[in-house]
Image (cartoon, rainbow, N blue to C red; front, side, top):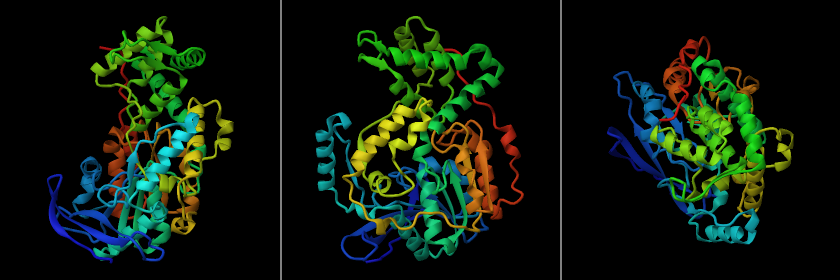
Length: 460
């Protein structure tokens, strides 16, 4: 059953080796369905090839590491001179027995429709969700790395990928040379229970960054007060734009929930530039509906539109992992002390929704395995953005208790996704760290030359 295929291929214009590893879906018994795990190896481009590759762990859960290659090569390209880059698709994603469903219908206000939608999805899945855990994925990765004859590897990943890295380290410590965590949180830190506070810290960072820049402070001299005014106003009465006045020809509404989602998403992707002008313009406007139309039109013309949350396909790997693994604890009661955060109600609603849906998702404690950190001498570099609404730098405060050879770095101006600060500092730090195999003496002076966020000061 455990067979490896390999062939020459071209990926994003680069010569590579592509293939699949056939593994048992149920790694606990080795019985039943067999599934493919797709991978790509981009060989080192320089003459002095080193034996320890860089292995990329994608985010999500639900992102395909192979599909991510074009977007991640700018992050990893400099590492490819001396080391192979290895991209291994997580079971349940991409072409590795993908488990996807249409977006769930219904809501907590319509539980029968939501339950019927989830149950219909589960009935038509070509896979047993119990075995699509992080532990089973990391065992796939370890087996494949062994088959490719890599004795030691350098792990690097973003967001959920950092969770997978930590689980890999727990299960296969002898395989790991270094571990780089981008926008991550230690397994033992209750990530979801910190979300409201971390979102609020990220927003306060953005407001303070504007205040620290003379031109932004001059354009928006009372931004913190503007924010309080706008938030209070939307709590009393949402802004409604009739379809006849909307550029999209549909009714637009901005209330506290939708504003919280917009700000969260903007900080998630790291596009902070339109946040101050959006807050200020709506706060001071007497006709907030007209101001919202102006902002929607002006920001789109300037290419700086605040992103909006999307919908569509449900990657069921997300549910198999987040409904069964202890690092993702959705307890609405644990959020009660964070009511002052703009994201509080959004996060409570999300936690309640997850609790309801997760009760329907099949689980296996044995397939999850042990997910509590243990002391490790493996060198660890953690890179977290000050504007990240999820994995704030403070989440790494106790990292050295588990990883004594570790360094936690705050990247100014970076959200959850990487942005310009990565090219200036995050990337060079990761490259130097992997090259020397330790955080000792790592030069972080690049942090002082990361350019400040270029805030949008006026509309076209």
